[in-house]
Length: 249
Image (cartoon, rainbow, N blue to C red; front, top):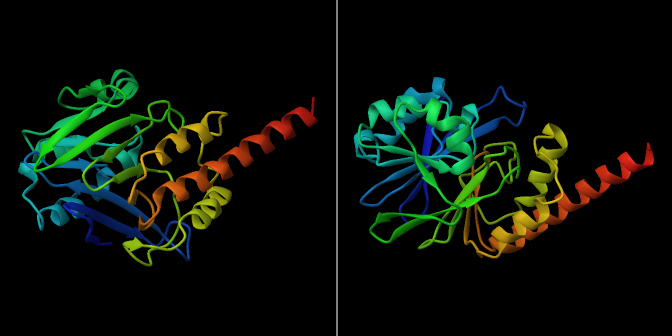
């Protein structure tokens, strides 16, 4: 395995590790995102066993000790498994997440006390970079789920939203909704709930220009339309699940 580096928006770098053995023959990517500024932030830590690869990749951009913030989408091994390895490598970095994630998991798991982020709270990284935390409980999964929105580049750090297979490119202007629907059909990874469509449409209202996917290529273009289409598919799934349940009663 190797970790590839690509700049997907001004000052935002995708660190991507491809694992061909997951869902072959297409394979699967695990992506972290570095947002530069006076106080650089990494979104997702990667799996603990991938830390040496990701650490070496980050060092080609900035020294690890320059990191000041470490954040993630929800408490799961690929999102935050290497949290403590990164905290050891970056002695001045602070973990940051929403209130639910901090109170339920992060205050115990992390070797340093986290910053608890309120819904809509902004971390100012300096040099014009501002990251807004947005609670998205159970969307796509995890009570503590959330995303971050970099305001200057209008980049949405999507976490597991739009998860898809393959490793064809780092940044695409093509369809990311169809592949995400196919991955949902395969993995059934989302926690279907009645609020999913509304939650995703609230992200569409941000009108992102870049969607930074944790699994798959980042997308550049009309992010609002892509999010709205994804919300429509989840509404369809939820309605179908409700119909199936009521038909058995």
